[in-house]
Image (cartoon, rainbow, N blue to C red):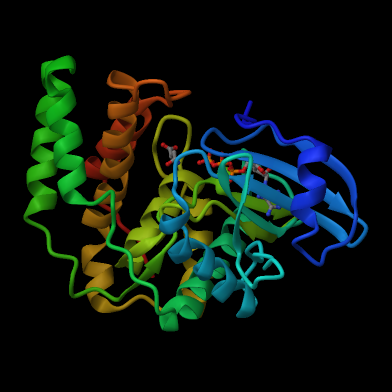
Length: 313
Ligand SMILES: Nc1ncnc2c1ncn2[C@@H]1O[C@H](COP(=O)(O)OP(=O)(O)OP(=O)(O)O)[C@@H](O)[C@H]1O
Ligand SMILES: N[C@@H](CCO)C(=O)O
């Protein structure tokens, strides 16, 4: 469940008076998600999603919320933040910072088709273009230094062969330099469960709370590693090609990106291998965790290491 902070209709009515979105008609807790409390809020004007932030503080939110507003203004399929009558996107309810956004069409899908992957690739490239003039800045909080610290915390609990693979890959990534690649704002967590698909179209990208400034190619690799791999962690060629063609038709890959692609796919796998290892071996005290399988991203990485044919464009 993902209602950590309960909201009743009585709580919501005075809150909604601070907005211009009509009268409350219905309030439903949303079961999916593990980080924040989310509710569908239906008013006489339409359907919205209310998020109560359980860990992020109000002062940490403007980068993400202003980014969503910027992208929505440029026609990207993201939920559009709704401002209150003081012209603030971030408000407070039951002791938590809040955000009210438009409800996006579609649903999370488990088994995407190549056509859906192409649409996600196309929207991701459009998102990168639209974010090019976004003024907010955010260093990647889950970059190399974080992977190294996470690995240090879990090495001794890992099987020696797995720990050795992790050490080798961290050394390879420490020697890599992606700073000359095209940079910009990346979502950095565009897994299937952070995209609503409306049939074959992208209904909306959600959950921008890992967004940051980094190499654009990193975002492509993270997305492909989730949308276009089989259950055993190998690339599904048809889905991968579709996603890359969809992306490249909007923002063609540069020669430097093509050269960096094999190592970037591994970096993106390493990012989630290390975070899942940490969640698995060292769940944060008091946090409600549903640890995801770290072994999956170890297998994704191993397949990338064994691969000889890296097709990007
Ligand atoms: N703007 C939106 N329109 C429609 N549905 C939404 C919207 N935002 C969120 N949802 C629904 O709420 C669910 C949970 O949202 P989300 O994944 O952002 O949860 P979270 O707990 O905030 O984040 P996390 O994925 O990190 O656990 C989504 O799977 C989706 O069904
Ligand atoms: N998408 C991540 C969890 C949220 O960062 C994972 O599957 O490990």
